[in-house]
Amino acid sequence: MRHLLLCSAAALFLPLSSAHADVFRFQLARPESSLQSITRFSADFEGAMIGDYDPDTNPAGTQTRPGLFGGSGNQPIPTSLSAGADAQNTTHPAGSFTLDIDTGAGTVLITALDADLLAGAAPDVPLTITFEFDTFRTFSPSSLYIGGFPLTIPFGQATVSALSARLPGQPGFGILSQTGPDTYSFTILAALELSFEASLLGQPIAPPPTVIPVPLSGDLILSGDSATATLTFDFGIQQVIPGPLPGGAGDITDFPLDLPTILPPGQTAHLLLSMSFQQFAIDSSFTATLIADGAADCLADFNGDGFVDFADYLEFLNLYDSQDPAADLNGDGFIDFIDYLEFLNLYEAGC
Image 1: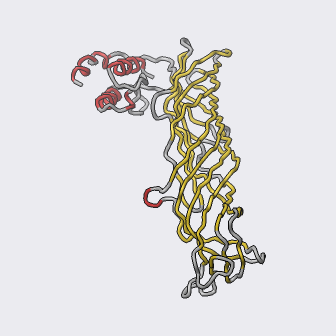
Image 2: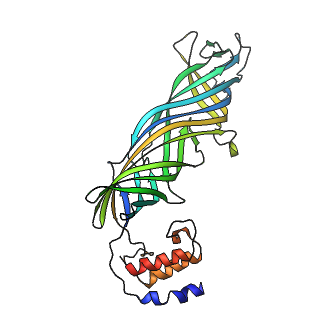
Image 3: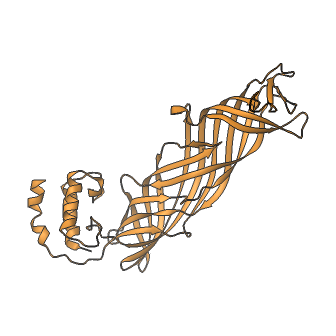
């Protein structure tokens, strides 16, 4: 770092000038921004169901016995279960992104995209479960359940608890086209990191984040040191997670299951379900329309105090020396002398 300090000594005393910034930091406007989603996911389990009878704590509870006639006692019934959900929802995202605009060259870079696509909402998705089991009987109440074919019943709600889109790596590069006075359209290709979490049968399901290339299109209006932008993109999440999961995550233990009686109908058998997670699959599509208001961003103000001075220079040197990604000012994935020269240009321009 010593040679950098010497090379830049003269730059510290250059007068700070005012320049029109071409970097704008945008905040999403709510509720104008929206996410239209078609959510489809399923989870497969293997295990057993058994009546909730307990000789000490629930002597009047349901008992289960395999076969047409059952035998005696409360016995587990081997069961396969598939839980599925399919719904459409609209949410209103929150978050921010930065556009680096060069109207002369007709280019635009997007960085620091971080969008919470649910923004506190937790859409409920109608859930159905499909059982497959061998024939068994229940007692208290008495009923016969003929096995060998799937039994599908509605079963409350699954919940989508988190959905986010981030741009953690390289900036997205795009083409900027002027459509009128101070108005532009653009198309950008960016590699977005998508994260998804849901709750199914009381169990959290959190697939690892996935990175996919996503074309972003939009419109931009510039007005001095402010701007407005509309950013739209479509994406899908297709992922299969096989079990078992570490630490038994996703497994179900003694989950209360109220099963309508079949022969005869009209009553409810109270069972407990214990299942091992086998597989989770999601195949969903999303359309995001992000409306955002922006202000000129002062890139040289590294400590965020509203001034460009020696403190910002020291802050940049610390980030540069530690190879912090924040010091990659030209967005090429490397932190080198080119970024240092870029900082000097920004420092001289001021805010």
